Amino acid sequence: MRMRCALIALLMGVANSAAAQVNPEDAIHYRQSQFSVILWNWMPLNGMVRGRIPFDAKEFAKRAERVASVAPQLLEGFPAGSDSGAETSAKKDIWADFADFTAKMKTFEQASAKLATTARAGDEAAIKAQFAVVGDACKACHDKYKAE
Amino acid sequence: MRMRCALIALLMGVANSAAAQVNPEDAIHYRQSQFSVILWNWMPLNGMVRGRIPFDAKEFAKRAERVASVAPQLLEGFPAGSDSGAETSAKKDIWADFADFTAKMKTFEQASAKLATTARAGDEAAIKAQFAVVGDACKACHDKYKAE
Image (cartoon, rainbow over all chains, first blue to last red; front, side, top):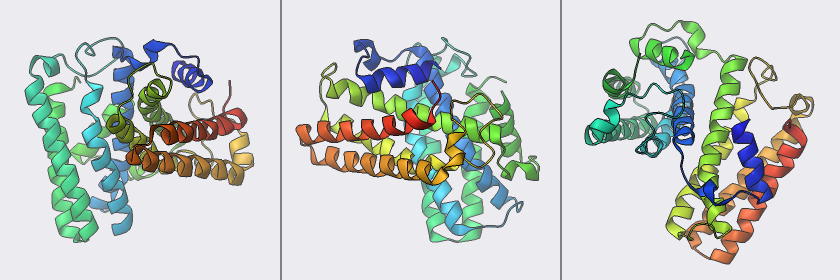
């Protein structure tokens, strides 16, 4: 509802200058949205890698590309001060060592970019191996920075 | 919480075969996430066009590109049966005339792609004109298919 009202206000041109500012609640909502988009695309990749759905190289490449495209957009969802303001599973440790968090995000970014490249090349074994590398990058960050 | 659990299950490799299937709730959550990502990027564009924040051609192009990138990913968030299953402002009219809804989505897709191209070219007046075209494409679809 809040987002819908904001969009209507923007389209009507009546949003005030605060519209250009980032508040913690919006940042939290943004990053959760991006993670949901990643998950939406990751699920069929996971299904293909584990043999639960038929491997489709073109479909795999398309979704791997989308994950790789979102990856570099995640960090802006974690501005200082966004450790609270809405329900979030992001631990405060993120902002206590933002350099390490950033490094882990970059690892994910690079791994997912390589998955997209590998997927386009079409070697199924190489794709599955790189898929595991991306999964490890996800897990490394979640283990340290995501609350249960 | 649900999404987090799903992700953990996927990463652990214990998700069952249902993980590859789409249920209405997931589709609704996915499309709302994508619209939120669009809004996140649209807000600064709006601020620049309306002179509330300084016009930054590079920043504009980056965010216009992101909107254009999400646009072709929206339709898959509206599978048959996803008119209910979670709170949604999508009207049932969408599925009553899916061809028209699809056409409106394509109009948005093309308009946002042109905005990204125009933004890269850097002509501020042309950018602002195309920004209005994209806004009209949003509004045309919302007016008909989005509940108040």
